[in-house]
Length: 223
Image 1 (cartoon, rainbow, N blue to C red):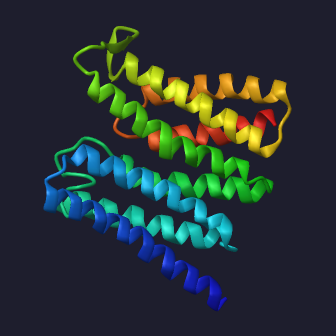
Image 2: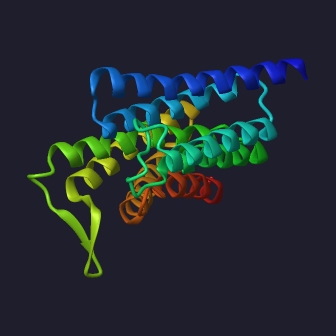
């Protein structure tokens, strides 16, 4: 029990340090908020993988997730963490991120398969920032996606990068886990395709919640 309390405190300090780092980069070096947000996003996702190295119960992960979701919610309302989420930004991705990490952690624990946690988190940590970078850098050279006469916020190039990076992440992870060739190819194509569509149509940062849940759900159904 004492170990669990210690791990919880260390996790809160660690994730809090990521928040402080993004604020430092934003205020000290005037780095654009979009970049500091993605830096914090990726670092937090990667750091959450450390939950698997210690015996964290889902309840403890839930407490950590609720703590940071509430902290970020208050921060957005009060405009405390401008490097993460300005009061003027119409996105709630930072608030959804801790919750999504908890849910996929719970599913992995429930079904006793670390893949259901590792793969959704890796897609969060790698594919979403890469897609954003591609869409931002080539913003003037690519068109935004139109779906059912609705102009989406996502660009064609950003979605292509998301699909390719997700395909590679899924393929490599499944190879490491030792799945068969057919399973690896099928899941890499299918899950990356579905995730790309979900990411493309998710407004206001809800992709931080929906993409991990869809990824975990598909893995549970298909494996």
